[in-house]
Image 1 (tube, rainbow, N blue to C red):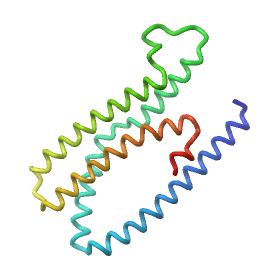
Image 2 (cartoon, rainbow, N blue to C red; image 1 turned 135 degrees about the horizontal axis):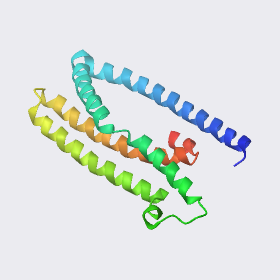
Image 3 (tube, rainbow, N blue to C red; image 1 turned 60 degrees about the vertical axis):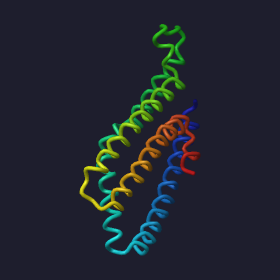
Length: 165
């Protein structure tokens, strides 16, 4: 790939990611305004408690799989361009194998995460509405983690305009 073409792809992907982040931030700000007005001070405090619990647990269970997928996709792409045929063990290490394995691992990890959250549901001293919020936000976290694997594919292929939408 010529350098100017690569530079153009980097620039356009950066622009689309930036626009997507700005758009997402504006939507999040509007949602925050509506949520705080709708819930009031006490309700928003309960919502924030559930959100904080999920954010802390989410940082622990994220495990950096997004970056691992990107790195593994790069290795798979490099190995696919070799003139010498790789050994049998290395032939399985192609892009579809990387994505399939990481998606399966994330899916299983999500089940484990939801199981732990469900256990915490009974152990936490919060009101039932806060506990329900924790469960719902945990499911949302799991969906975001699965989406990150798809975003990694778009990023590797320089198609971030598709993931920004």
